[in-house]
Image 1 (cartoon, one colour):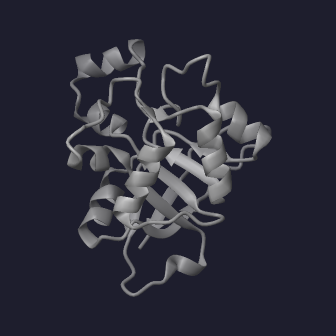
Image 2 (image 1 turned 60 degrees about the vertical axis):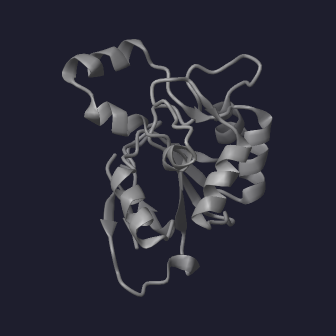
Image 3 (image 1 turned 45 degrees about the vertical axis):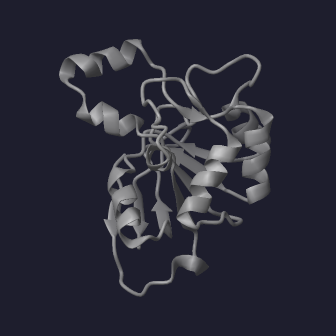
Length: 188
């Protein structure tokens, strides 16, 4: 899923559904502790909060949280042989699956989450942490998006210093379907 970034100078998306980009990969790289896109590193609540604070972003009710881990960036840069290995070795960073993350997301009022990794949560998961999917979708009513290409959006946000904008996604209308491409667009 690749974003189309459309820029409308002077637009005010604060009144509409907006996205908030948490560029965790960029934040940790700037902090000198880069996130390995091929390792199953859980992104804990404090790291997510620090990423948002660095961007000057505050989550509000109804926001769509976009989390960039760098996974898709690494995949796109990989050779054909390396890409084949992604199907075998599926470890990737993602949100920690525990109750603390679900509680943070619920308390923040986030309505949906999309990431650039294949699972939103860390892979592999752990029995102790449980499943973020099972906490967020059936229990809390969240929508999740995976494998969103957030690189161009992250670059645009870094350039203008603004990590929020209007977010629109129109999934395919598939009766009885359980998933769809997001068909997402960010308008700044």
